[in-house]
Amino acid sequence: MLTFLALTSVALLGIVPEQSQAIVIYTGWERHALVGSDIRLSCSFFSWRWTSEDVTFSWTYRPDGSRDAISIFHYTGGAAYLDNKGPFRDRLEFVGNPGRRDGSILLKNLELSDNGTFTCDAKNPPDIVGRPSSVRLLVFEKVPIQAGVITGAIIGVVLGLLLLIVVIYYLMRFLVARRVFSLSVSKHGKKKKEGSQQRQIKV
Amino acid sequence: MLLILLGVLILHVIILILLIVSTAATAWSVGNSGGKDLWYKCSTNSGVYGCLPSSNEDWIQAVQALMILSVLFCFFSLIAFLYQLFRLVKGGRFFFTAIFQILASVFVMCGAIIYTVMCPEDKKIYTHFGYAYVLAWVAFPLCLISGLIYIVLRKKE
Image (cartoon, rainbow over all chains, first blue to last red; front, side):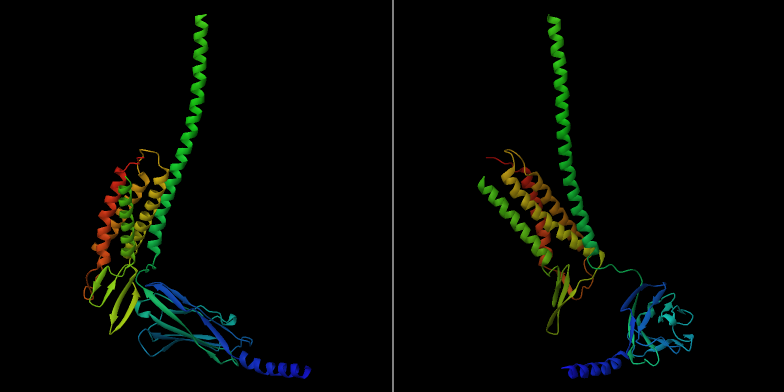
C-alpha cells in the first residue's frame, strides 16, 4: 500500500511539471466600439514561472474576410515596437505593463475597416509553449439596439401605469370614505346645538 | 339573458384566440419560400427549412410589445368579465371589462398600423401579407365591438 502511494506520488510529480509548463494567455472574446472612439485591447497571461526579463508580447491583426494576418505590435527586450507602415500607423499605443504580465494596446480613432480579429501571443522564457488568444473587434456606426429592449420597456411602462391607476383608484376610494365619515360626525354635532336653542326659546 | 351572456363570452374567447394566433404565427409577410413575422423569418433554401431571428429594429419591437399588450389586456378583460358577472350589483355596467377590451383593440390597431407603414423591405422574398396580419386587422374591429357591447350591457337578474 505504502509503495503504491509512493509510486503514484512520484508519477504525479513527474507529470505535473510537464503540464504546468504551458503558458495561458487571456484576452477578451469580443469587443464592440463606435466609429471614431478609442478601445483598449487587453492581454495578460498566466505562467508558473516568474516573469522573465525576456518576456515578449506580440499582436497580429487579421481583417474580416481576409486569410492573412499582419503583425502590428511587438514587445521584446524591454522595448515596444509599434506598427509604422500598416493600417494602424500612428493609431497604436502601448498601455501595458510587462512587469505585471499585462500586454494591452490602445487603438485610437477607430474606422469601419478595423473590423477583424486581433491575436495576442505572449512568451515568458523558458515557458514558451502556449496557445495565442484572439479577440474579435466589431466597429459600429451607431449603437445597435438589443433584441427585446424596447419591447420590454413598452410592456413594463404600460403595465406599470395600469398598476398605478388601480392603486390610485383604490386609494381615492379609501380616502373619500374616511372624509365622508368625519363629515357626518360634525353635521351631527351642529344639529344637536340647533335643537337645544329651539327648546330654550319655546320655554 | 343567458343566451346573450353566452354569446358575448364566446365572442370574447374567439377574439382572444385570434389575437394569440396572430401574435405567434409566422405569417405576417409571406412569399413563395417562407414566412416572416414579428419574431422570426423562416424560409426554405434548397429544400432545407430554417428560421433566423427577425431584425432588431425599433418598430418591430414596438409591434411585438403592442401585440403582446393587446393579448394581455384581452385576457385581463376576460377575467374582469367573469369577476364582474358574479360580483356586480344589479343594474351595473361591465365598466372594467369594457375599458380593458377597448384598450386591447386600440393596441392591436396601433400594432397593425405600424406594421403596415414600416413593412419589411425585402420585397423579393416576401411578396405579400400573410394570414396572421389579416387576423390582426380582423381582431381589431371585433374587439372594439365587443368592448362597446360591454358598455351597453347591464346586469339584470
